[in-house]
Image (cartoon, rainbow, N blue to C red):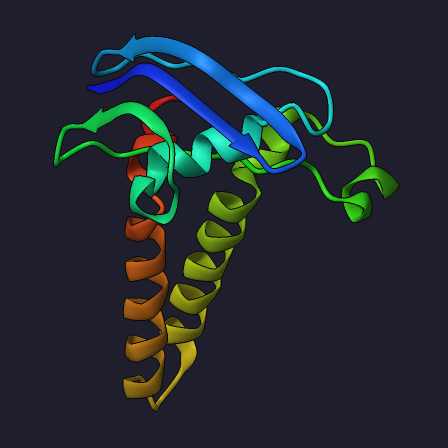
Length: 138
């Protein structure tokens, strides 16, 4: 659970929030939508690491709370048409392909030790981004 109560925050030149409150229960999702400079990224940063900021109000997170965050698309992403699903799934697909490639190499290699190490690193990276959950949801 994430609970924000009466959060107020401002930069020296701009007030961003004035007493905003909301609660997200386990399993709920939300999106922050607004104009450039309206404070969407700052709000996420405050929720993720409130100790970095001086603000009024309260931000509470359960200790086992995990936050998934998709940052703004960069200018490089505009070169190629990409769906949101493709953008989010790109790392998963890349790691899946890397794991499959390493498995293929292991079938024909006589020196398997370095490949086992690469395989474990790829599996660890896949686990770190919850690759199994991504597969279940598709």
